[in-house]
Amino acid sequence: MEQTLVNRVAGSGLVTIDLETFYPEGEVVPFDLKDHLFMGLILKEKDFREALKAHDWAQYTGKNLAVFCSADAIIPMWAYMLVAAYAAPFARDVFQGLPEQYAEFAFLKTLATLSPDDYAGKRLVIKGCSDKPVPPSAYLEITRRLQPVAASIMFGEPCSTVPVFKRPTANSQQQL
Image (cartoon, rainbow, N blue to C red; front, side, top):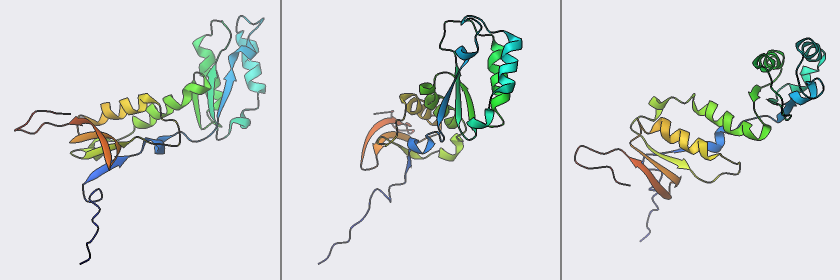
């Protein structure tokens, strides 16, 4: 007698969310304001404006621009605004911070666009393994955003999960 294999995971109603799919696209390139400081100390508005006007902004087409200053200098807020104004028509994204901080920013920005209502009442598995580095803040943020609506949230793979949250039913208490 032949037994039929049943995929219990497929029939379980679990919804898997793979945070790796939210990994930011495009290269992250630095824009160091240090290169525009007068005597390595201050930013002169007139000189800075001229330098930005002469800069080749097209080189950032489709790239993510990380704007920062590696020198110990006081940078006026308008300097970041000017860089954003020049870079925006070309760059995929403009971010204030170090290039290695961009991925975390991009994850949080993307997760903020998720509609929690799409996950209302669902049993969610936040996938744990990925080929790209997913920052811990992304796991924290997805849990924070979806906990108010999800029936349950688990971490791992559908065949082996770690319970994170389970909405209590009328006759039970929350247990993890």
